[in-house]
Image (cartoon, rainbow, N blue to C red; front, side, top):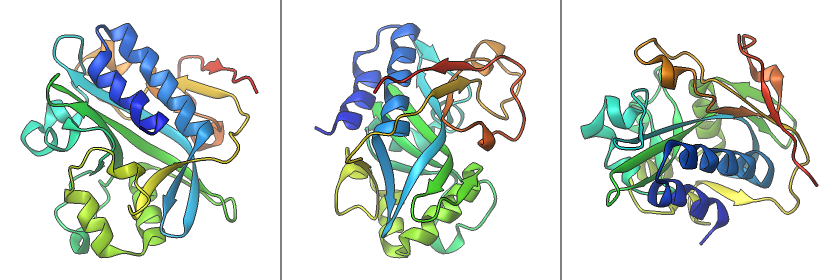
Length: 227
């Protein structure tokens, strides 16, 4: 199994506490930000910023997860690891609104654990162009994929590991050589006040502070990555 696939799957299947979930978040964030690239069509992208959402009633009842907010619509998608969840998707031809987002799923129906990893900022590796904001990222990735039928298939497909397959029009692929950067973490962006305990959790990871529209009120934590 792909290393990122396994790391994410372990969060959903092996975690027995909030602390173990959070350890899994950090491990997966390091992999995505430093060891993997996002491939869409013929373009490759560096992930610059991402956020974790995860709902498991006993150990991590995060009310900001779409699995909690829209269970009938989202839980089937988030019951596997390595599927693509397009926010509020009803069809590729109508997918033009401004509340879009793209999550890599990680979950387990058996463990009633459902997660989504939201991609917030990317950099096109061919020319260094940066794009920030979930809806902007979706637009950028769909343009690069240039395959409406392929995207439609991914949006409704629930196969475990689809996002790591070579025949997927949008996929994660290991880098030939890992990046050497500092990884930062802070609280997630734009959440309401329904539960401050989870609102203030530092589940947002990034490597480039320029992607942040506003400087977080809390000091950033920095995880230095060794070569």
